[in-house]
Length: 178
Image 1 (spheres, helix red, strand yellow):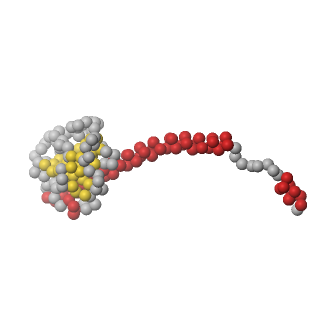
Image 2 (cartoon, rainbow, N blue to C red):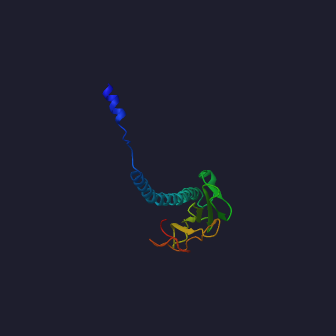
């Protein structure tokens, strides 16, 4: 027993990490953070855009339900989809969550639904259900940067069929997907 105590007392060697080893670990952590932060920010922007697009798809489903019941867009939408804030003004912004602006035209046969995403883009979906119009019928998608404006306005409904792969970011082009 005395030998064990004597051996412990004779040990004056300090054990631990050197400053260089600690600095290498800190450097490795900094490199990993530099790689990870842009990835997380990109995922956040994409999620913000998808939230507005999801609201638009839910609003379009409500509009199509309305059209099926009445053969016209824009009636009884709050009761069909109460989770959305149906805006009745001429612009929509994201100060109130889940806000969408629905503008009907052509005697209720065409609807353009617009929402502002937290990614500073205006997203729109147009649905044309006009039996008399043989030029274009179906769903089109549109995205425009918000720019210096504070709210989104509804773009004009598509007048001709959208082409596959068309650029949705141009001022007057509707496309077949977001």
